[in-house]
Image (cartoon, rainbow, N blue to C red; front, side):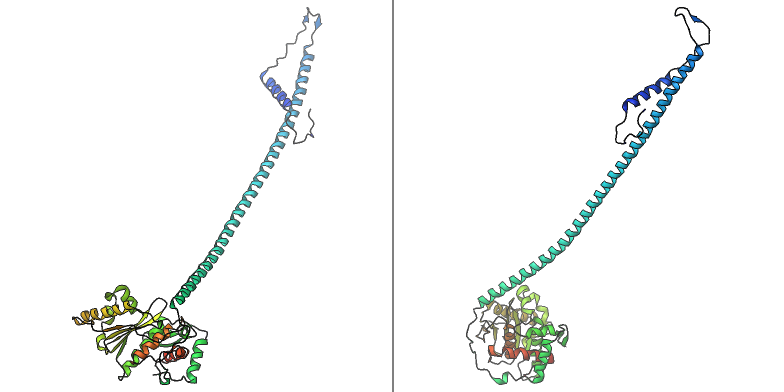
Length: 390
């Protein structure tokens, strides 16, 4: 009989299992018939056979053998159960290891996705910074090229003598107002409303330092010039277009602006002022009906014959559209006269505003670069009070 203390890791006793199988098969397939009781004597052998004793002997052997086989069978069954339990434990352990591995893979995948998303956010943020820096570099390069193209003079060319009555001194109240506007914190604070516009601190700050003037400041100041001409009949009758008129006229032609003057007869005015924005430079143009001329004022000394031609054609088409008759400008003067020159790349908007203000009074341009800081402060005070000093 096999030892019951056999290790579970030992292999099966295949020989014993085969022996057990054959014995059971033999017992199930053979029929043991006990011999009949008789007192016959084997004459040939000379031996007397005891039938009762033989039967008991055979049954004892079979019983003992069956008991042994049953014990071996029970042992093998136990061994099989132990092996099955061991296999189940091993399978369970493998399953747990697999689940642990899968969990680790999922966690790794999740972490990778999280890090990937976080990395994507960081990359996008840095790319946004790079794009912003590139735009700034492009803007800086463009401005540098523009400044190089200006070829600004190193010395200050005085155009004409400056007359003090053209530039009245600003009061202490006016200067305090300018400081309040420029050094306040709320850029969205509204300082004045009029002519269909609201002027905020952000707009007025463009008049500070060497900042470029925006459309809101130019348009509001032009409206002040026209409003003054309407109230003072001693001045030339003046009409002004906003900063978008020339751009629309140059891009879309007369069809784009013919409805701008549905209720206005431009030919009834003495002076028409048209701001011209050349991308990064302000200029001023003027239609003078009193002298029959169209003039273009550029503080950088530029010549813009295209602007002169467009405005001349506009007059002819406007007259034909509104008055149904032709208008002859063949004898008119088309000129880009010499004007005071700016000495930097920032004051073109202020120069253009002064050109407009002087032209509305048909005055000579008796000023130069030296009055720009003064005029920036003056424009703040005039816009906030919605009234020109002169």
